[in-house]
Image (tube, rainbow, N blue to C red; front, side, top):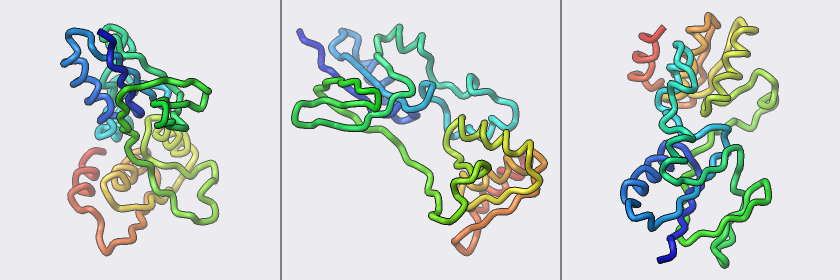
Length: 192
């Protein structure tokens, strides 16, 4: 019997959870699973990103490993972004020119941070708060900065503000809504 080729674009928390479920159902080896991560690592716990500033490492946040995927027969490509889907011949194409054919395609790419279209948003010390690499850049900037501004008073904005505060940076939050996400602020304020 020919294996069903399943391609998962995105290896974040949702894409990884889908792959785990699929592997649990793949005891007879009827699926060939391939996933793409545009990041340099496999899935990690984004919900706990702020713990990175309290001493956790990227390894502490990992949800899986290359060894686990190898053991389960999951094909994975790191630092590789799917740039085209050719639905007519059931194929995805990556920024490295790789073509992978599929029978079923799952798109689990998550979200991207909104960066306001304002002058200066591309400066060296302007960062988003989404990936481990973003946090590494924020930490590096924090070592050179005395003050910081976070745009957005939602969950991630307040987590970012707390990270700056914990680094000893004078921190300001700018929020469009009439109030901050209070529960997040109380939680974040308690972690320094």
